Length: 319
Image (cartoon, rainbow, N blue to C red; front, side, top):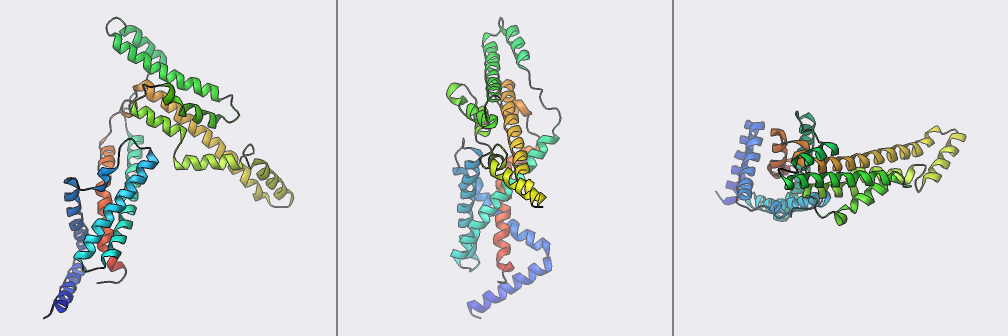
């Protein structure tokens, strides 16, 4: 028989085998796709390794998504060439699978790590400023360097708490906290990497906190559109539309939540400084679930990518 007929029969036999195996065959096919990806990653051929360290959370996520798309496009092109599919289409599918798989793996890993942290037992107790001063005084004679390090932790924590007290008198305390905390790296040259990351988190915040802050700034009665939202609510009430009051209420609630979250993050920064400036000193060593959530995200992303590459052709009715 000619090549085309032999290829058709071979694909038919493969499809029959997959149908007989059911879910086990699907798992085996996905696993077979993951193996070369994992081997290449272990050999250093991974775009994720090119993501530089020290980036902010948002920039790091964007870089990882981009790296996942690049790596997925490469594997997609190889998959398409090996399965007699259009290489360009397969590369596009691989890029999409790489981005979505990386995003899903980061989300699953983040949620798992957060839940594991909440369930962790025996968290270290953060010393108070008075505790550290007493420890420093006791260490003066035997270990002057240790005493100086303890006083440095107190000084950094006191500076943050002083900024919080100053911000309470500002017209917009939440904005004042972010601005003052954001200037700490210029005033303090001895911040640790984890402390710098916490400073950035307070000053800029996550996407959800930014959205909450923007909602409060716009719709709260004291916000930029507060007058309009209150006027609209009153007009709606007088005209028989009580739901119109929702806008200023949502704005006020968002403003209160934004203020509370920012202040809590700043207090957490002060605790981090008193604990010694490292996340581990503040939260304790990672448990098994946290270690898996941190180390296996790339592996999960490759499993998801392999699944998309393996199943997509059959999802659209191709052999």
